[in-house]
Length: 556
Ligand SMILES: Cc1cc2nc3c(=O)[nH]c(=O)nc-3n(C[C@H](O)[C@H](O)[C@H](O)COP(=O)(O)OP(=O)(O)OC[C@H]3O[C@@H](n4cnc5c(N)ncnc54)[C@H](O)[C@@H]3O)c2cc1C
Image 1 (tube, rainbow, N blue to C red):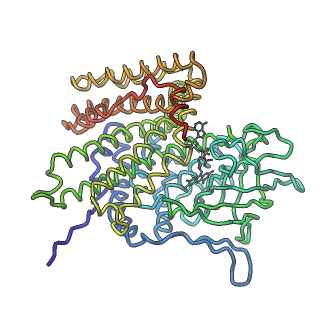
Image 2 (cartoon, protein in one colour):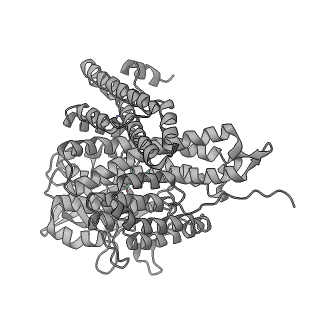
């Protein structure tokens, strides 16, 4: 028999995940942990077993759009893949959205929900995309206080009954305006006392959803973001026909190919105002804060999947006389990836904790500001980390990582969307600056990191704490100087500034957890991750300026 390589396999993804279990042990009260653990064990078992196997079998399936039926009726039916059908049912039954709104565990309900989502996401072909928008829509409708729409939609968006459960889309991007959403061209007209929408939406994911929240400009409103209103749309009429919505085509994408992302024409689509006839961008903001948090959780979930497979492969693949898992250089490579995941995970779940407090009305003003600042920071940092970690994870399989029927390349392709949708890295860097301006600067963030690090005693962690504080001090000084130099300097450095904040806060969080884990679990793994993460660098702020950028960007 010729040599045959054993493929990588997955175990129970909850049981195998030391970082997740250790984090939950620290954060959740004992009774809450005991209550949520069985559901996490089940989800971990499914993620590494049934769902992962189904993903491999279903690998080549993609959503199919049928625009016309046999008799010439426009139907725009989209058939999703078997994994997506399974995922929809499971998501409802396991309360992947509902858990946050039932609030059984008060401020910890978001930790419960997102721990489930973290296990679910990598095994369900990014079904997290419609769940993110569903969660976001429920939060935006509740924040708007529109009782009719809350009664009509929120009960369905947060249902555990698969027959009642609805998902929601979020239609913002148009050809002219993606990041610059103020350029939205979709018009809203009142006809016979009801609103109708006319326009073209350029990226609309999970287009099988029953409803969507979207932006349009009521006739007569001024140009720009303030003149837009937030509208509620149901995608099908009472007979199940498209609600004056044409699906022009599905996007042919680099990744997320299981997610049906469509281009739409709204041709007199009936719609309802969610919260007044202007300030739509402000009214959709609660949705974006939730979808961005889902994005950060998805980034961690994909990194974790890449690493879980890479670790198992390293035990099985023998090179130069020994398994890869015994080769110091291979171990060093994987350790670097695990450290990045550890930083991303702690930052993401810190945001999740803050979101839970905010939902439960338990967040102080300072915590609300931190949530507002760290949501874009976590999204932008973890999105970039996911691309880098998954690129390296793919390489760790050698040639097999590049071959489609191993099921590995899709991880990298899917990860590449994470820094793009829900706001690109640059756009979120500018958003983080805006949030800091509203918070009155970095003082609160520095106070919070000081608080996080106050219990750190292990000598390496004390040294790491000093680095965190130095990086934040530098960031504050950089911002003060850039503001004196003018807006071009601030904008040019915004990404490096936001990344620095993200790396500093995540390192502080890893250090805090490392100390706890040493004391309570006698485990040095998080300490090792903290050292490694710090060695990868904290501050990205150097004395480069906007003039350099202009010079380097010139071609020819
Ligand atoms: C798979 C997929 C699914 C999607 N699904 C949806 C969906 O369901 N609903 C929806 O509404 N949208 C969706 N989008 C759209 C997505 O949110 C936008 O593509 C994204 O926000 C970027 O907008 P844009 O394409 O207009 O790019 P642009 O805004 O044109 O950005 C181009 C580049 O310019 C940079 N840039 C933009 N502004 C600035 C600035 N001020 N300073 C510095 N740099 C800047 C960006 O970072 C980017 O690198 C989806 C996109 C993808 C890829």
